[in-house]
Amino acid sequence: MRTIAFLSTLISLSCLAAETCSRVATINYQEVLIDVSSSNRGEGLRYYLQKDQIAKELLDEYQSNNRPTWKNAAASTLGTAMILGGLLRTTSGENETFTSKNFLLFGGISLIGVSYLISKTNQYNNEYLLLKSIEEYNKRNSPKILFSPTGDGLGFGFGFGQEF
Image 1 (tube, rainbow, N blue to C red):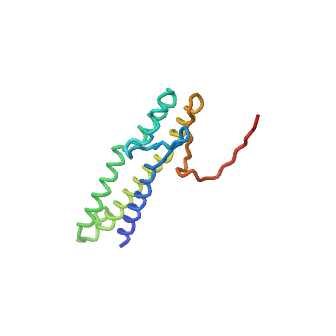
Image 2 (cartoon, one colour):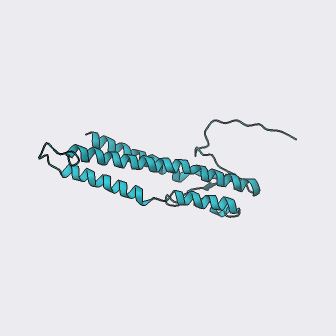
Image 3 (cartoon, one colour):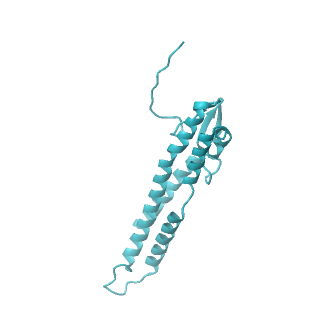
């Protein structure tokens, strides 16, 4: 029962993560979709950011860091194999430690969970590169790209204005 609850939590979290595909930036009072696909995040801004070499390099680095790695795939595959092995395993002896049913089930779930959390943490920390890329573009080019990292434009902030 705990396994089902944990897996349903992971599935619901991945559904929430799909909302990042709807991030928008405002350019010339028009909203531009930043993530045109989930596999190539930030590609919607390439047309503008490629005008500035530094911004383009930062965007390329951002996109390369967002690609799935073989390490995450291997950890998830091993975790799935451990869960399947645990489900198929029958208890036959008392001296089992690494091949016991509970160890395989909880070890597999833990491995998948840790792999997922590491992947999401890396993606979250990588967002700095996209913000830096937009900032570099805005320093030297126009039209300016207005982008709220929270995605919905809501957040707390303050600024100072000066009239001439």
